Length: 286
Image 1 (cartoon, rainbow, N blue to C red):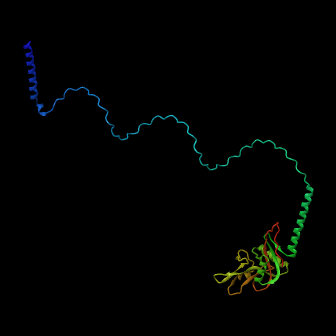
Image 2 (cartoon, rainbow, N blue to C red; image 1 turned 90 degrees about the vertical axis):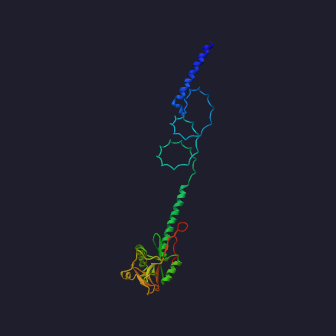
């Protein structure tokens, strides 16, 4: 028994020495490298580590599925009123409403009596118009147009005095600014048995060339219409060396130059103005 154990130990020693000799005899011993051992058993799971730093944003994901429609929200505030639209087409006529209640009977009118009063007023008004026409045309000897009265004053005065006389009456020396007015005034002079009268035309301020042109009594220049004769037309611009010159109207309708110091009759004109009650203001007679 002892011999057998001794043999076994000797065998194991021989094997050990053989392995040692082999290891030291191998050229890999000089590389100081060790051969990996056999794979060990799986270790235990370690504890959870600390949270790492936030990484960079990744690419956006695919759009998700549309969610369900939410509930209807509350009504918002009323906005500002917009501009008015175009006028629409006229609608159909509505149904006729019910008839109203019968009214109370009216009072009896004595229409015949009132008709007589109105008729008498019309007669009196006509008589008054005739009386006014008689006063204007016969007593005062006025001529008139739609806008003005014209009065021939049979008082011989110089131009300046005649102009002042017309202003005291509430008017101005007559200014024939149109052919129709000039014709009316010429007939007025002829019917009065006169040959010439002063009109509201005289020389104005001095021009740059030293001459003076004619202007109306209201200081407006002569424009458009003038009734100078051919001879007078050549002298319608007066030299500054001559005396101040005025204008006369002949019964033929022609204008003539005349010195302002000559005394003669004249015509005044008055604008028509309504008084309270619808009457017309009539200028005072001479």
